[in-house]
Image 1 (tube, rainbow, N blue to C red):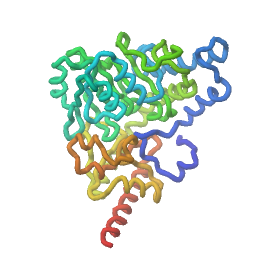
Image 2 (tube, rainbow, N blue to C red):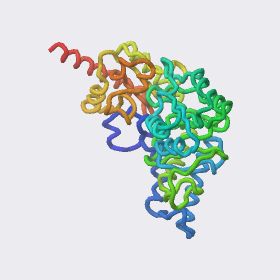
Image 3 (cartoon, helix red, strand yellow):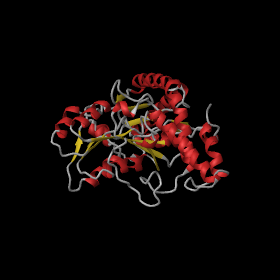
Image 4 (cartoon, rainbow, N blue to C red):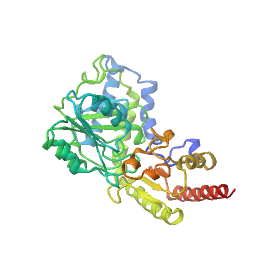
Length: 383
């Protein structure tokens, strides 16, 4: 069932890698903790005990989905905080990241390494990390932490994270994985994958904004990022946003079903759209041909300025898409495509990201409107 928000009837939302429409069941689960069950989970009376129980139930749902212990899940304000905490909370210096990481990994890693070893592993034309280069750097023994994403937020390429974890174990470096885009789209077990830490975010899986989690394997020497009242077992101080955490837990429960029920259909729509766009728009797909998320389609359409096109699609046709990461849309520069050797295409790439609420008809409408945008551009060029 689609959300009954009025604007949904007027717009086609295809930017789910930026954020997702909140699921009605999530809103329903959150509502009591906004109105009646407003207690602080650290208090001992009934309202507080109810809140505490709701938080722990959400924690259990997330741990169950990750395949870890409940006490290995720590709630945060979202993916950015989780990434910053993982990178800044390891006291030993030396950081390795990939050239296509999200800014919330790249920036804190650089900040931590002002006077310490820092290395960005390059990627191939598909955005895949070069494992031989990573191993060469790890052999030096200069690095305490490797932080590489599970799947790229712009082109959808899935990294060989299990192999990366094996290399980290071999050379005694900790491995943090930014799993924000992958969680809820592909199933994985953190223990089987060999993660020491992993970042999650609720609003990428039809949950509320402003809440996320960091998985921390037992025994990982992570220091607190925030000090104060000692919440989250002394690791992350600050009063917990109970209603958001409850919503996160519900979104995770739904996502566990959606991976099997909805993602195969989304994958089929994306594949059909990629073929249609290649034929009708001369579009070229970016990212790995097989190792990619089922819901992200990134294409280059020659001769089209995607920042302008995205604005026109939204203002004139009510279609929401993006030219890249939401964090860099206004700068109009994709460091991901740049790292993939597509420097000349950083302004002409379109990211389309679907959710369970999108249909084949949505995609056909997008193609039709892109054709109209191209036609308008051709007319202007003739003037």
